[in-house]
Length: 407
Image (cartoon, rainbow, N blue to C red; front, side, top):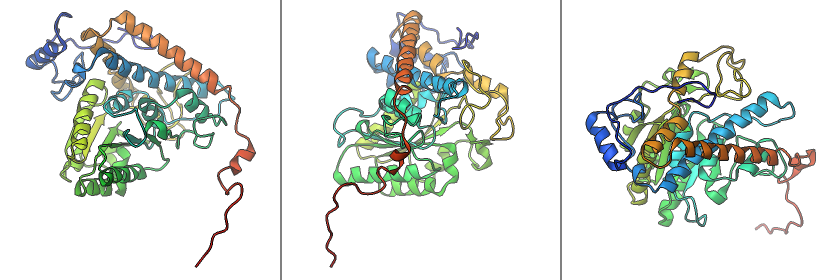
């Protein structure tokens, strides 16, 4: 099997190979019995002894939608990175999500994403918001326009990357700070509980949030009030440029959540079926009044903390010197080792094993997604740029302002 840059990728063979005629449930039972699901390094990448037993019962179209979502995120990130590297007129930037696609996809696939705003589940993001936004269903062309400060962008060119939002699909948005998003999300969860709604609030936050006081205050309040909050910690190992062990004494950050009496799960963030599995359990628990859940997804970002330093146009990932870190802070072998367990490759292999599609159809789907993303960038980058006058909009009240009586 080859990766997206044409390099040969090999996977260790396991003892759980099952003929295609076997059912998904039979395949998973046999895999469990033979121990094929014990190690994260197995060909099917089923970690922690768990398997995606909720995902396996999804209809094929839902599973294909999840695969498409992973690909949409991947090719949005790669296309934007190429724009940053090769287009001198491009003004956009991003904290890239490539490598972590299975986390947002698996979690958002378990949510209620369609319907009136008063019924859909809400997602809050912090850094790396583009993956969360796409997984929640935002309009990609208008997001592309937004990230290049175009006047017709999703938020009128005011948000750029760090503040994109689309409440119509329940993506409340990102913030540029480390910490506040969990607190804000818990406020929505409190509102759901107060109204008697069965909606769920989800917050995605990185491992760096552990070092912020918001982390602990959010978990404490969520437990005390039994809030329908799902805290998804995307542990990609690095707080910007420092390994997460620098500030966290736990091998698993989930141990800190368990200390508050909150159900906490650690999951292989490279396997979308596993992420969906734990997310569905958390969503079902929250809807039933069972309170919060903490999910730590072990994952990895292929690019550096911000932008595309160390990357090359047309290639996936960043290797080498990052001028912002004043160093090559990650060993290249570490990056390449994680890329051997790529979320795209793992999802494709599982769905081929399950008989959802074959390799030919998987390639066709990827070609369709690449064309869709190319069209999104073509449209977004053709839109009018913001003007200096736009900066005064939404600052002062416009039109006639009624006289207020004080007394």
